[in-house]
Image 1 (cartoon, rainbow, N blue to C red):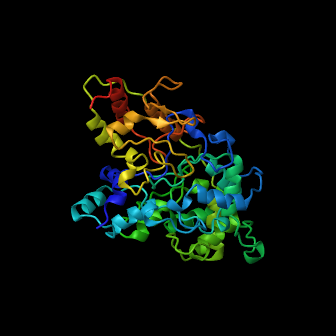
Image 2: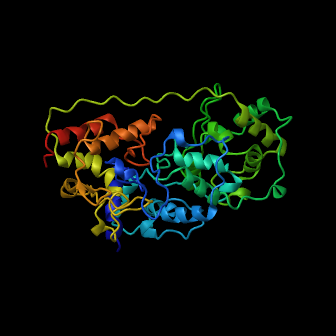
Image 3: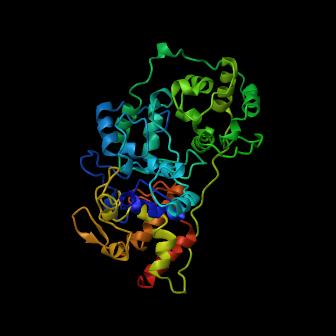
Length: 432
């Protein structure tokens, strides 16, 4: 029976939170990408991301291919053009094996993990990206990821890449786009957005898709995710407010008519409709007036607790539930302590082990190879560990800090009470 190789990663499942992309963002120097990546701008912000309509550099697809390999995109995504990651290193496959009962572990542990398994059961494949997505949109999304799929807990993490690297990756992912002669240009001239809205509702598109910013749509209760295909379709369905930026109208029409012909294996169902109906639906999706996005505020920072806070409580409620998956003990995972410890996903090894009290106390390794404390105060006055948690809250509010990558990377920010717990524990001298 094989349990130990993934034991450290599975600690995270006990509390239903698992992230497989991270770095040591306790210090500004951790925003630098790991060698052999070439770009030096590892702290790109939304301001640096090109809008979908902006003319971006064409990019170097060959370099993009190397970057996709070095960033280990295949540890989460299929369809990268790379060989599949080994099962022990494939974040999503591990969770899928647990959900399907294929993972070799005691029955009691499997039951407990499945009761709490929420994160990274479904991740979009990158197959046929060039036939679905605008190259410039991919570039911008890599530089400034946002919540594209509201029913998927995890989001694309902020990787340590700059604009040139993002252009190269986008060029590689769209390298196999079909020639226009194979897919005739579809004009929306004469299509009816009003009729498209009626079809959108009649065919139940809102069962899986959100379309934020459009008022008055009939509310459709999401289907119960009883089967794998249904669950994946709901989880992976993007918010359609972004569709006009992500895709060209002709590609949207082809996709709506027969998604499986574009991307075999997609959970998007083929809904019966005529080409004229598809054009009407796309006209609605591409031209419906959109209200501005609802503002997201940064949660209020709570005062320090007066009661005693111990490491055991912080470990149970925070470190064990989220942090250990990327800052784990390498001895339990075939030498892989996660991207926040032994490195990965383009991030250099930082030696930050959050699986034990001693590991946290040992801190992390900076760019000069020196050990630094995660409890020392950063530029804003907060302990660096706390600053990283606060930075994730700011990222969700659209206020990414180029000097700090928020934690947990690619997962929902911790709540105010959880951050309050960590900060109080540090302020009390970190009692065991």
